[in-house]
Length: 413
Ligand SMILES: Cc1cc2nc3c(=O)[nH]c(=O)nc-3n(C[C@H](O)[C@H](O)[C@H](O)COP(=O)(O)OP(=O)(O)OC[C@H]3O[C@@H](n4cnc5c(N)ncnc54)[C@H](O)[C@@H]3O)c2cc1C
Image (cartoon, rainbow, N blue to C red):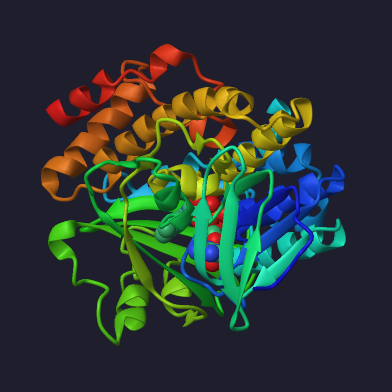
């Protein structure tokens, strides 16, 4: 059994949430150890588009400058294309992402997920946190005096910190071992993603979104030569991006009749795997038990169609950091305000994501007509639009806009 000085905090998972929380707690003088199962962060197809409200969270955490210095790329324009609008009309109505500056926000920021994880881990190290990579056989025992056991380099280790933070992502071991129940929506569609290089003809400041035939497509440039692409597609089409030639089929799907210049995306070169996931939201009623708190995807994740997971995670980090510094008892009472805020935040984002999914990731003539009708109604202000929440944060819009009956109204069209 390896012996250690017990840190005050053990964080399991050195991804976005773990690396960020380790950094800010260590900066505040708290002894933190980060346990990470991987030896290197690799592209598993995760989030790389940070919403303006998420960028604001990184500013409040004192992490933004480091993201920018490591290549964080701000976008300038959004265009919604698709088979429910002609390209000239779509291009005459771009969303100026720089206009968020007027509301006190930066425009969305893009960065490769493994690069962001590496950067945050390096910041954590620099701030005095210990990082142990390649851990296996993790066991977390919650309680007033929690215990963490794991193996590293063939040796079993044990820690007795004051608190364990589960930042170990969507399939969280910590959540399961702490006995925290996870709720899950039914899967509505699948989402595939791939990073593509050699996209020099595509404007580096332009993100796009839209639906054509049987796919909903999204593209987020990371530089003048690299774009993160995603495609949402039906469960009934689940083999669409399966098999050995899935990268080629994924790129081919980006030959979009409704998007001028989409060949610059389709002619790119795969720069990572093409992986698919179910879109469903998950959530927990209270992301803590005595001795254990969950953050990020481990605490429940949002449908990636609206790209909120990174922002959610940075907000979790900020709130948990503030509560831990304000009240050093770190009992369940310390974290109650976090659970309350998160419950409503995730409810609103779940509703926003469901409206996007019904509207944009359902296919066929009827779905296309519904998109056209909703656009017209929104122009007349006769159908609620919660899209702004995905840019400036779910708390900014009035609560009554997040009324579940929007979904019934949509389904009834
Ligand atoms: C297809 C897809 C597209 C997405 N697009 C976006 C987007 O555009 N914008 C956005 O904001 N969000 C997006 N997201 C969501 C976003 O990626 C996540 O919400 C975010 O990465 C969560 O951060 P995290 O730190 O909780 O988890 P992660 O970043 O996944 O980190 C978890 C870490 O824990 C480690 N770990 C796991 N198990 C253990 C263990 N037992 N012991 C030790 N370590 C462990 C992992 O190796 C990993 O390093 C997307 C997600 C998907 C699936």
